[in-house]
Length: 237
Image 1 (cartoon, rainbow, N blue to C red):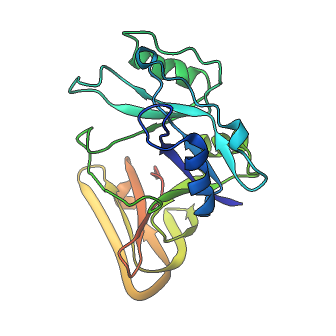
Image 2 (image 1 turned 90 degrees about the vertical axis):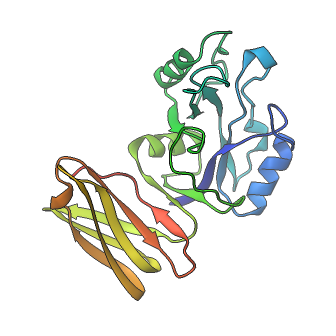
């Protein structure tokens, strides 16, 4: 089943404004299947991992996790990650431990996601609340199943369009989507940037030769008539 979720939101348990209950209720009412309430985990502020287990319902679940930083917040090279699937007894980063805590989180089985692209000198794409989400293909609406699916890459990100199928066979990538006006394949080729796209008034499928991307990666992007996008995970032909 495909499950809609968000891996990055805060509550008043760290630097957010709403209570964990209010945050969960807002996402649940918006039709989400799960969230990760990724409050900052900073011992110096007394911030802890937020226990969201009481917020789970038969139709809505939560992944336990937190936001971790690689260095002091005012350090120019600092980056932030969400650690999804942390054990509740994960030891808080003591003063001075930053990147080491991220390593400990990975070793504890967490799935790590890079956050705040603008702060990390990456392309910035601002979206409204509930304006973009993950679609995760998991066997059940359960935290462990969701984390396992994330680790296996069984998800994509979207503002609305659906990536229904991607199959790579003998150098040909077949893509099926909801109705869109453009399906593109881009990435970095062996010697230069490469991109190819299919456009039309109403598309639901496209095929691509992945040879230009051999030795590197490629990624599918689908764009609907309203300009909303869906992004597949990187493929390595």
